[in-house]
Length: 130
Image (spheres, one colour):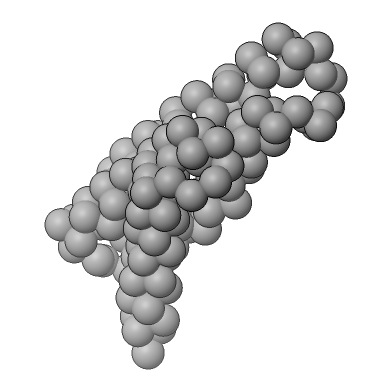
């Protein structure tokens, strides 16, 4: 039986991040008594988009990581890419919230790291197909 410990680690860490971001959305909605959406509140838009952005990028990165691990990519590479993914998602979330939706270095670096991880894993998986 194949062990997929590395992807499991980063999937777990990303899941905890998504839940933390979801908690911020719930706290906002309960505090402002907003049942759905953001009620036009800028703070609400920021926390909802921070959570949604994680949901948009994390699954793709983890699917690519899982495929790479199944295809035998070294654990060193997987840890480097997984660590960069988690760091990128954390920086993005911190930057989007701290920058109140505007420019913030964390947001820029976090997005760049996430995209870089996805591109590297995509290329690795395409190369493995040949």
